[in-house]
Length: 249
Image (cartoon, rainbow, N blue to C red):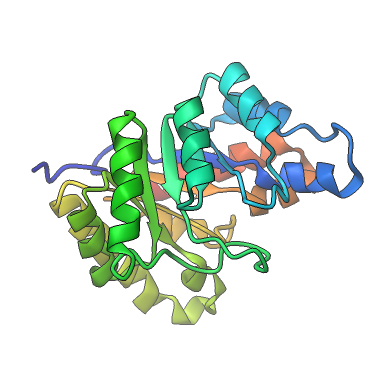
């Protein structure tokens, strides 16, 4: 197994465009278009596009996925629940990656990581089916040794650590959580898994996470879409890219 995953390489930025679709759906119609947002993000320095097709289609829709696959050149990371419906959609579209996330209909946003340890038998089926279709499978998990070890047993090539707890702690209380993320990233790399991270990251809190050398990718969306209201999406993505690069340097 390699021990160099994520080390000494540029940190990738995946831009989540879900909440461009949220704004569109609040009014109905076609504007603002999340595909247009993806194209702007690509020009501004994004390395990939992330979109979560939820069961209730509250933001991204099936048509959005069709158009993203047809119009963007960047890799598409499809966030999806572990359901037969979403599996069929992923297998039909063959995105670059599929990130399996927990999903509760009543939640406003993803509230935590998958229980990969407790749902091994369920997740094994989806990891196998997606992997057999050459779709890079990622598991969205809490940064804990138990969950990383579960991902190892499942044979997932990628994990994405939920950084929501880190993001919501006061700055002076973040050190322990940051160490937990770093330790889990190191454990993942040691076992041949590429670690990513995301959720709740902003201009103010991204640098310490971006500085973790084993992390290969950050997926960020809501904050940059919100900031785009004031500065434009191009400027929002470029600033996040600059902060990530500076932290990694």
